Length: 248
Image (cartoon, rainbow, N blue to C red; front, side):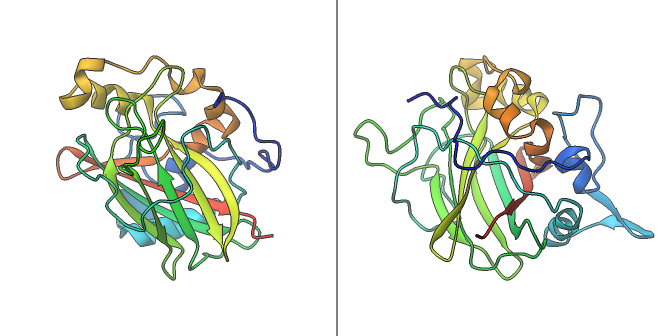
């Protein structure tokens, strides 16, 4: 199956101006880089007060600034119909620690969607997916139900790359038992280069496709679909995003 095909049922409808996820979080960039490279510090500004926001506060603030419909994308050839409900999806896979903190909200009202069911899946450090071609394992796959703030948290690893695609995480959202969003989340190219030069990623080297060269990344709105990242625990990463979905 060609993962580059477009999904016709709902394409990108609205992308308002702004500087992408990092700008929405009110976070400053570390060093240089283009609009697809939001590597951020943890500090942010709220009104007249400057300080470090809690993760939930940062997501709520970002949500207020990004009340837009998240573009629909292909689910690709590696989705499987049944995954465990869990926060830690690593299941023994090695790699740089990645915590994903995602908020789901109604794109029409900006209100959080408690009880939204959020599913993720992505490649391991070698660029392979579980659960395909007869494999019954389910590592780096899972789903969770959002809390009152529409937030879910997943503990995983930084995804590896495979030929023709920039690094990404797949996501699917159900509300009231109905699928309302299928999309992908992306990573700053500069961070991917750093990650892939170390540890279990190093033998494969860097990705053969960068964000600007990935057609699905462009369908997703470019830098607007890049996770806001910061380091945690010395060698791990925290990635945050707000997903606006259409309930009906």
